[in-house]
Length: 282
Image 1 (cartoon, rainbow, N blue to C red):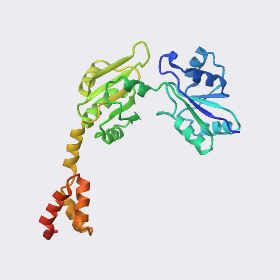
Image 2: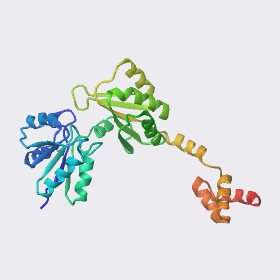
Image 3: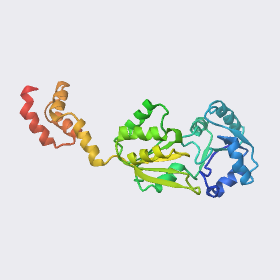
Image 4: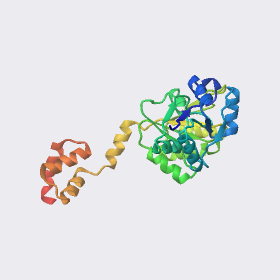
């Protein structure tokens, strides 16, 4: 009988945030796969957990993953933990989870701390719709492309950022997304927890004068829906352009006008009147 892989969330700062279920699991499994065993030994020592630790991280996720799969197939239960928060979120654990599923091994998630959800609920920004982008690329070209992909998103945009990249990323945000409200969180659940609520330009000014320290959760207000709709209307082809395009493709009459009206979000009658007006020139 195969063992199970337990995804165990660990505290993102305050050790009191660990769950009773996670503690019981870490003590009862056969092995704990940890992102950094030196870091995780502090956690296990604090809670008197004697289970053996093994390393599983970005640089050995495939090779070590195969070995962990073998142990699971042999019947061993394994707990997966990251340095902080929920494993498999912007984390090599997602590879091991996929490998388990492909091999018919049960994956059991244990709810717990996650930095981006902890930051979001206290941000004051929209929580009904959001997109989490993990860590943005170290390459400015790729980072700009990532930001372009969320430029017109109307929900909250969330990502993690390291201190040495924060200022450059903020400048890219200003260039691509423009001025928006932004919330930058750091030291979550710790004594000096901080939520910096400002604008993109305000954040650039502040961190230019005050070099950033610590790991950050950056949350950006989404594009205003009316602004997005206006941009979309400007970028759409005109009804006449679409009528000519689909006429050349063989559409005629009401089929043609219904197709154009549907794509542009306007009334069928409006498009049909235009069609009658220009049909002799099509």
